[in-house]
Length: 463
Image (cartoon, rainbow, N blue to C red; front, side, top):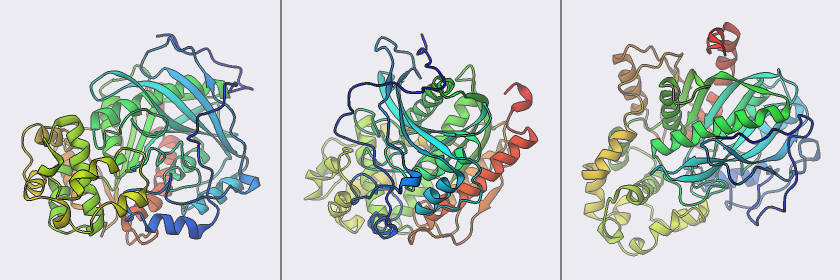
């Protein structure tokens, strides 16, 4: 398919009519407001963002007015075709990036460059292979090399459409992307289907669509990069957190299998994933081994999201007790904030689930079981031919660390050495799970940079 005609490097964007009402959210300034938002989230579902509370504007030194997006001809339909590109903000110096990351609660000792951030909208496919669009965040170093190493970051779970990297600035969900770009990489982060600027509902924990959205975001980033005077190298260093850890493994497998003619797998560094979601994770949830409220939210989201694709139940009353049988599905429509989801769900599984609902999670059958087998296969029956590290934090209250053991053992059986990095008793606003992302990010930035220096990301093979 025809690629969009690149604009001159000095002018990476052009004008178009004003954006719709739903807007990109600038960085919050008061740390107390961020703490309040995150603490209301149940510390793991990333329910902050769009509506978790008011946010202030970023300090002038770190802020820039977003520019209107460049738009391509509507006739292009190929997967990964760029639909629009919009400059969101520029962090003009390493000091500005450092301030941004620290506001988000992340370390900044790996910062070397200022960063420019763009939202890309691109063509992709939905879980049934039908054409759709999705969005994502592309962050580029201001003064880096022309040919940039490529990092893909897949974010953790959110419930509002704006809980996505291209919609939130100076926040938990966008900080890893900025961190990688500030170390000299082209950092690419899909919002996923149904999130950010993407239409429709988000197919949560659907590995297939997470993979296609991630791969097509890479293609869109490669098409756009020349407008900024850059080019993306072939080898992709892939990372992701929580939901995004499984998405990262899905992307890694596709890259290694040759799903794209240009990109290939350079390294894998997933963080705190539920790699055995239908087995280890759901068993821990039902046994009360995870944070109780988070267990309620994950159970509800699992049944609702998988039912949309796989007909898990005929009527909400089959699996949810009254009055939640009339309300829970609507809470996960992408328009409700974290606070609304928390207020709209009970505090325990016994109040949420019927006996059939609990039984379905404990002993999945039919299309539900088949879908979970796909979700649970991200570490099985393939051998990454690239460096792999698995990051986790002991005592994780959201994704039981037994998931990482399952993944490590599966990779080992296929002959892959995948060291497990225990990040220790890390904390992010009271959450060990969120803390693992904040703690792992600078470690992964350093590891990826070291692989690049040693030529361990595929550069020696034409990257």
